Length: 379
Image 1: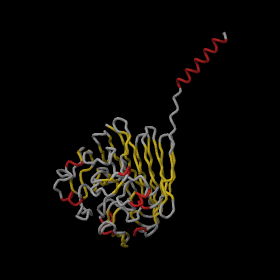
Image 2: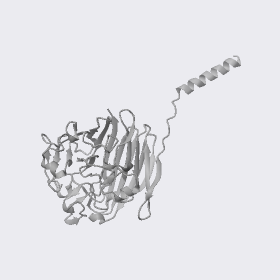
Image 3: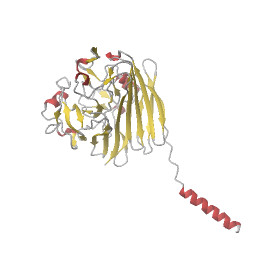
């Protein structure tokens, strides 16, 4: 065979081999930077998680806070869909729990009191006469240890914290982990793991304020919401659950089908008066401890959709009623009334004092676990 023909055949074979090979997928690296210095001189970090579709989540280990979530709209444009601050000082001074992990106990405990094994405990009172979101210096006001990792399709930050016996009035030394993972399915997965050396209570939750328009100058009243729930745990005028369940049918609390948040938020309703809008726990149909769909939020203008999945039995829906323009957030924007929505997966409020509610007790040798997923898509 002439050399010229051999060369042509070899080149042709090489071209076939190259054509059959898939192009290498772009490597997206997880980024870590210093976010700022705390008053005690310690440095806080900020991690940037990016997936192969361009979605990006920024997380700081101060307060385990989600600082930003860049999610695409129906036309492929990326915008930040959570409220937060541009600098560490914003989170240090924050009083509205923007983006943080709250605990040891998310939500309220009546008068901050609860009893375990015959011993009464008094947690910090920081919401009128009640205890809220772990107290004045709960999980949202500590610097968590941080460790990042990634695979071909995920990027993660594992945050760990040790809460000492007596912290904010809670018994037991608690070890808590909160791991954020961004996947190529545009999911932000939040996984928790907790242990104790003494009987205690544990009920952490995530507290991001979402605004799917991509601009918190807009309210969330046109966002459409659907919750997989037929009943709520109603509250008294101190926002403490009464201990009963009431059906949502024929009430402003009915989100069994997609409906605009603003459709009934100003209806004459005792529950809406107590909460100054929506600030209630919905009893999810899923009570078996498996991860299932809990809620869907649709923003009609941008086409963004957020679906919440959780293994928790309750979902606190808060419509940003206490935002009043006094908080100045990212890009120097003042966060006004009802410009963010919180969907907090958890056990029911005041469960330590309501034995008929799902238990929040954690004993030595047991492991607290929770998985909640915020999945972003478009329609």
